[in-house]
Length: 348
Image (cartoon, rainbow, N blue to C red; front, side, top):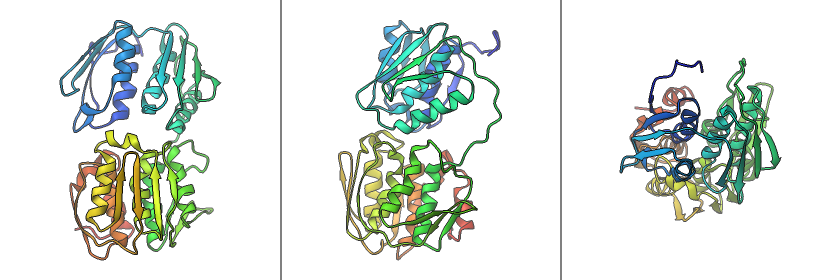
């Protein structure tokens, strides 16, 4: 960023995106020294104490509304030793990895305990390397050494397909007449690529072809699975388990309670309303599979993943599903309903 080109106290509207907010706070301090963040929905309720504690120790001003947002931060982000717990959102770690190379001095980022959602940190380090930023992982998922005074280089890059969104269509392929997905990277660092592993373990017929990833109609069986490294897969997997033979246990999902909705409760309540036999636990679900769901009326909880889960649930429901709040998909997949209809889904 050229000197003099930044607006004093830029206002950044993060909408409902927790990742945008958590990436931008340290970045804004590194390049502008000040910023005000606003947002919508439940964003103000998403925890930020990791940053608040770190930044206030450096004397950086932290002024937040009682509702969490707007948030105003001001001060100089200093190089040094940063220590964060591993069982919080990896978004805090990504934010620091993006900002610390831009500081004048060297920094060390240490992770306390076991790092959850580790694949997202791998994505961050991989992307930074592509842009010429040097980060040394001294101990895997524990210590990162980050030289200061770095800049981001110019790179021609293609954004790979999103495994989080693809997961819904992979499951719909197992439910219906098969679905071919193009543009996914078989060697991606994205944690949600594990959807293939989980659904295959349930009996899903999923294969790579010359054209892309193909999901064929399959009969699923219940399994136990730990999704601590890919919690966003919970709606897809809970739906899959709801119509699988036998019982399933999904664990490692405690952070779902602070998403766009309390996603353990919203997933559980939605599937119950459709006729699933599902019990919400502290960190996931216990599910007894059924041959099919009933259908019925449900609410999206203004959560994009709940809306998409309900759409795919229609593939295995005896009656239509009436979804209130279907526009929630706009957050991450504005064309979802057009693609859904293209694949044969009926939307009125």
